[in-house]
Picture 1 (spheres, one colour):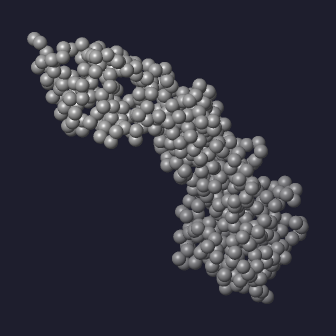
Picture 2 (cartoon, helix red, strand yellow):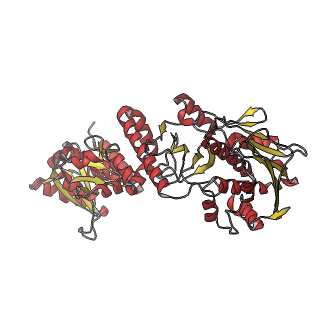
Length: 555
């Protein structure tokens, strides 16, 4: 007797083909997943039988067959196979239906309609010793038949037969099936055979030796990792390994991770399990019991997933801290390669911030210092946002005994800002060179005369000239850029160092001596030391000054 499915099968098949699964190839994964679930269900009955799954690819007019020795199905099981789905096409309803074996079996079996117009299931239940072999044939037109078959199976288990449609045969032939099986089932703990080839029960990457893990990463991910971080946790059954990228990755963007669920491949570019800030690695993970979407091609957002993600993040950070302590060179290499991204994320992510707080070096006038060391230093701690400004102030700060931090790298100043709860850091600019140098004005007639000569020599440059003593003595002049407090017609202040040998000679020069050339040379030198980009006119002025001084030198 032909009976009607208790679902809107045409609507379900449409959802399967256009909305639920990403590709026709998933039919094989779904059928083997059903077989594996059946093997697990039989083991839960207490049967001491080693699970087995066999796949025979389609050939010519012969069907594709997936065979298992699992729990099997009764006639009532077959009749109720699809009843849990209802007539809806909502994904959430599919996910709810997959919470037990029959629901999973029904939805998984429907995926076969991606490649075939009819599905044949021959099964013998393991629940009773004398269970008959039943045959269920379902059609994409929405009808099915159930009857006892004359061909009895030798023991409990199930066979699924698919006669692929003409245009779908390429998804079911030997080459395709072997390729799909090698990809999907490599880590399954149940033996899966395609013909005479075992395609499952491979050692998971996280259980390989370090050398084997490096080789696995090269073969599967295409790069030689800088290191491998184990991701196992005693508080969750999620386990795996993260491979540190040997190249700079874009901060906040992850290639995605290879995800398995109890040995079955779920996705190859998943970005939900590992925290987004861990852009510097790519992982292979088995998510254990974490709930999957109805299509089993991704994970459902859930509290369990959020907990697992936090545990993985904690594990990654803990491992980096361990590497920092035991293998400082390796850690420096990792941070050096991924520094910009790590700093960008540290501005937003407190976990990464805490790691970099004690391990990220900043260049300072007293050597490299971490953020924590800077916070422990007497304040205020001065920092600059531009490399040129740092170099312009560095020697002055050193001689003044002032700690100056170079925060010119990407996100470095912002990172100091977010950790600065007590206003410990103070940004300085080139205007602060005078405050650092603390020049002592020279108040005598020689200084007045030198300033008058300098004003005449540098009249076209619109600078204000001062004469004062400061350290270092070998820096003959300081350039102090004009700010909002300066007169409108003044570009900046040139401070001639009365402690330097060159300026002392100018101070002692006779009143009738022309010192225009050395004053021009000191002016341009002060600009260069102040990291002010020289104009063509400034360079010409320097060349002329040097030539004039050479010609004026007595022979």
